[in-house]
Amino acid sequence: MTDLRELYQAVILDHNRNPRNFRMAQCHNHKAQGVNPLCGDEVQIYLQLNEAGIIEDISFQGRGCAISTASASIMTETLKGRSADEADTYFSAFHQLVTGEGGRAAAELDFSKLDVLGGVAAYPARVKCATLAWHTVQAALHQNNEKITTE
Amino acid sequence: MTSAALDVDSVRADFPILKQQIHGRPLVYLDSGASAQKPEVVIQAVSDYYRRDHSNVHRAVHTLSQRATAAYEAVREKVCTLLNAARTSEIIYVSGTTAAINLVAQTYGRANLSVGSEVLVTEMEHHANIVPWQIACELSGATLKVVPFHDNGVLDLEQYRTMLSDDTRIVAVTHISNTLGTINPMTEMIRLAHDAGAVVLVDGAQAVPHMTVDVQALDCDFYAFSAHKLYGPTGFGILYGKESLLEAMPPWQGGGDMIKQVRFAQTTYNDLPYKFEAGTPHIAGAVGLGAAIDYVSGHGLGQIAAHERALLNYAQAQASAVSGLQVFGTAPDKAAVLSFELDGIHAHDVGTVLDHEGIAVRAGHHCAMPVMEHFGVAATVRASFGMYNNYDDVDALFAGIARTKDLMSA
Image (cartoon, rainbow over all chains, first blue to last red; front, side):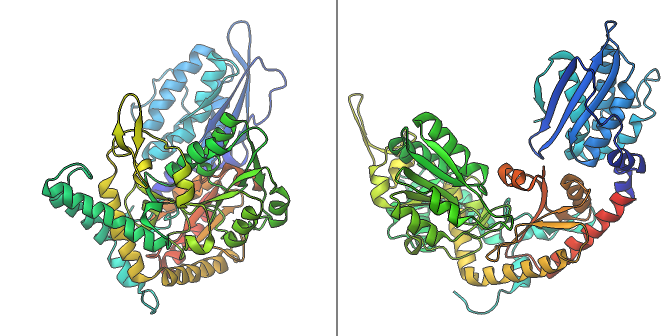
């Protein structure tokens, strides 16, 4: 069970039980819905982008497994206050982290919270769970109001 | 058929895949509802066919083609016996249950459905017995109606009676629910449908491996099943249809083998069952199914059903003792499926922890999203039993569930 604990770290279980920013943002100008047809998981992302392109508020709703819920929760904490361009950069670095394709994220990126999801790399079947919310943010930022799927 | 109880130890020894470890633990395979494992005799039959007898069927005068054709057609007799069909012309080879249902929807359905007519399905159907009818209804203007089930997973027969009418053309219903395990009262449902003037297609994908099926006693019009759930190869399956209906139906796919004569002015279609078998078929699939039928029949479907029922009872008793575990589907007449949810733990997380313990279960919506919707859940965990499962497998499952709860609550 030791390496399973790598996947289900206490921080992940905490975010699963008490997800941060788990609400519909009162004020949002971008939103998208993501679904994982394989397991029926779904997530809605709400974004408030200001004129300078900064994510002033980000929140989510939906239902999913511990990995997808914790990933969405940590993602909202990471992206709040960052620009849309930075969100793209974080997504590609995060994708490398959970697929095990990259090394450590570049020093200029704040991966202090995201690193806890690195255990997903050992479970290829769960990568989709970890990236669902991130894909949905991409949709919200770039193809507003689209429904996206991880299949 | 033998009358002694199933010798599970000897059955287990016949399945090479079971002799392995997953994550350092002996494999506990509880996903036969998705696809059953293959006994050595099936693997050997497919291998022997490719090593010795392969050629195309119904094509050539040379020895190999004759051998392949003989092996391929001999399986039609075995299927005929398995289902107690009246004649081999009623046994259509297809790629699986899904193809069988699509065939009926696209031929019988499109020929007999129109605006004002109705198709009845149930709320517990697999997507494969929903979507083909949605497509057929959309093309024909017919209406799809859904018979609900009670919260214990038993079909609402009162509603079914009420919904049947002169407008009902087709009733498409699963024999056994893949998610809830419910065994539907087919004989009564078919009689009621016939009284209303409708034909009945039975989705037998989950039934054929777990019980004796007699299409003549059922009096069903169509019956579909897949080889791979009956310990045979993937990509092969059977559509049984009453000869009079099949004769009247237009063909579905056109091509070689389904014709007698092709002229640009007019093509004459082949006789049953070949009218519905265009193109080079999955010959090895048929051969493998033949070996699987021999294997299962040798052990006796009655013995297999009794063994699986005992396992299910054992599992259900343990499930009722686990706090926070809710079972979906508690019909009195139920086959070897245990669908459940652990309070506060998503099915996928349960699936990952169990996999880590070497236990293979299905976690998800089981291609039955309306069933998930009925219970207001996104996904469930499903343990499904086959003839090779034993009490140790059930114990391993519940030990795994206990570990899941420990890990996820830490």
